[in-house]
Image (cartoon, rainbow, N blue to C red):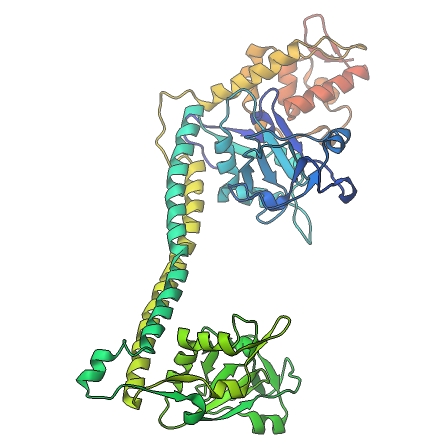
Length: 534
């Protein structure tokens, strides 16, 4: 970890939980253990958001089952850390649900005891890109990544003084609240733009959009006509099976998106007869005759972007000279056209249909060709500006998400709020946690067979050592059975605290190893209270 700000320290999750805290996996709950009528909620990965509780799942067990399986019951304020994606290592605080709750095994529960650490600070640290990258580096698994709880417990976090933790949390919450409001407003722009476009089209085909322009140019009012009177063809497209490869694209209903042709997700044909029969020409209007009730009737204009034919769920309309193809396309996509499609569609089980005869009967206003083109010009110009605003809003929305990550990155480096020299240093905070843990151990009686007493390392001597325990990652699995004995033979007799420092182990693992080797009678306590190899 990079250089820390003044007054900060480093410790792992296990250490930071304090005496009486909890760092534990959730519970292994199989399908057979679950009961939809159970009283105890089973929290799952889907419920763990990136800094917030999602509350998405609906799995339960009975209280009898939860207690039989000796499950860990959650408390309001517990920190829940996802050991699987996505993203890996995301953390949120359990808000409490007004009922008992447990978690699945792939969620780590972190509960602080003693009030020495702010849980929100721990959450923000874990969710920062800095720590998230470290977590990713500790993960394993080829198909789906996972971080072992043993590694997550030893995850080292930067620790500011307690009062600074609270200042940082307040600052983060203030800044992220502003970005959340910005996201909310930006996310509304899409719906506002859609409504604006709809109102514009409604105004265009009621004659109001160009009323003044029409008067200034001495043009008559639009006449009501049926589409069949001013257009021809109305033919259905190819019913042949298309292929993922070929010489010419086959446009389908999915290629009509928001009034224009989308040239992604194409299928093809190489059949010369099909190509000759269904070849599209510039100005052909494509009407979607079969789709869901909400989408049937969507329309787009083919403008000779590339050679193509059209599939059977589309109807081709060829406009006569007095009907502008773009005018017709916008008219069919306007509230006027959509209402007509909704009224005349035939509904099946999941699909609706509008045949060619009904399409021919579409009744709509037809102004002079000059006014049609003016209407199209105004619509296209307004839509281009709206789409530009939408694109900018999309970019801004992406930036707000990156802003939150930048805030957390700055927070864990100490750059979000100024340090106060009067704050109690984090090293003292960690000493206090160590004192509490050691004092708890000193109250335990000595065990039989020469087991080491838990108060061998005095509180005063342990203080300067314990703050570094977070970085001692060796466990008993990493050392030999005579690891401590070997150190004593090499270095000679030494006090317990010095042996601990030499061992490179966490204090919990050190005590376990020392008990093991003393029980094996390879280490003993000398008259001077030092440890020596037997």
